Image 1 (cartoon, rainbow, N blue to C red):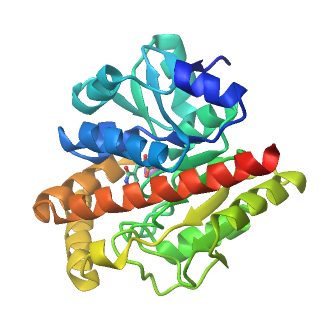
Image 2: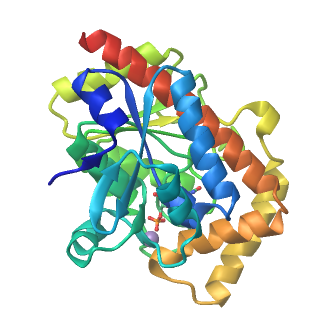
Length: 301
Ligand code: PSU
Ligand code: MN
């Protein structure tokens, strides 16, 4: 299927230059207005600073888009009619002409169609805590689509050890960048040692190329710890997360509403502390993804 690319993204791809895909559920359902739109533009600037071209992905009036204008970013950030689309929702969005923020899974699918293989986000979805069977399609898309995703690990709204077990089962390579421990989004520490430690973006790009040459057919997950200066107190944010989970349960929040509900509670209850950390780590991830994409593009020449 055709992806509508901005002129800048189309030119970069045809010239073999580095491009980094960015998701848009973080704009439509992950952060409050107006910070969501401001951050989206800052993230694009961070990618450019490192010498790559940003391609923010979304579905606009049923069209798959890679590379948005400021008015489209604003619409995603402000319009209450914008839905949250995982990859399984894309076909419906296309035939109904809907406008959607794309989750990690949907962004990976559209990036792959557009020929973009490096993607930066804040946190991915995973296996939720508790005994239910709520497992994000981000994991199954990582198993099926050859796109590298840079994130700050997995928030403890999820079951981190089970998420890592599932990634192992799904044959998805995991890299921890510059650390041995898998990070937990707001803090660099999850208590779980997982994945391959790499310290150089060029090595990450080489691993992506090797994974492709092996015919794995999977993506790759790169976990980039939040910088220590921006990290939150683990005990405090842990208690806030537990309270948000209990409230979601009490209110009977289900399905695709669970993650946005929890993110909204965390941002509200911490009075901006969680949001500030979220912004810092997304920018940090965008810079790393751009360095990986630049290294990959140089190698391919
Ligand atoms: N986790 C975050 N911030 C986010 C998301 C997850 O810390 O914005 C968003 C991403 O778009 C991710 C999606 O792909 O939520 C996962 O949703 P679900 O749990 O419904 O699969
Ligand atoms: Mn779910």
